[in-house]
Length: 192
Image (cartoon, rainbow, N blue to C red):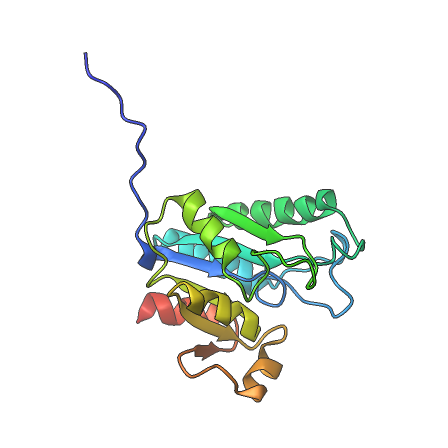
């Protein structure tokens, strides 16, 4: 009789792409995305995530959601948005391996809110990745990039969402690749 192993094959860090949500996958708002009706995806981002999956990449999401701490919406509403995101991606043949979110406000002193790398470490643990060095963090703000750099990720800034403002400030972008949107990043990554 042979024993069956439940050990998962560890993912390679260079196949992990972690995405910020608001401004990268969907339209952002200075007034927060407070309902499923307000959560409007960029169609090209949904297609890009599916394309990454088909190319053998693992996609995760790391998103600050301080609107929960501020009382603008609750975790049930957030889960409805994420369920819809997952359904859209799966309808195009893609997959999101894990969504990490920080429900805390900026003064809550948590370890998960970007620019701290707590959510990325959660993704690493959840997916059984030995190291995040060589993986990608894609965002539209400096704090997204800082969270990625803190754990050895390569970084990409997209000009959607707050990306153009982040690029215009020009601070902390020395090692960052810059793209018009997620679709352009994915095209560059897969073709290069």
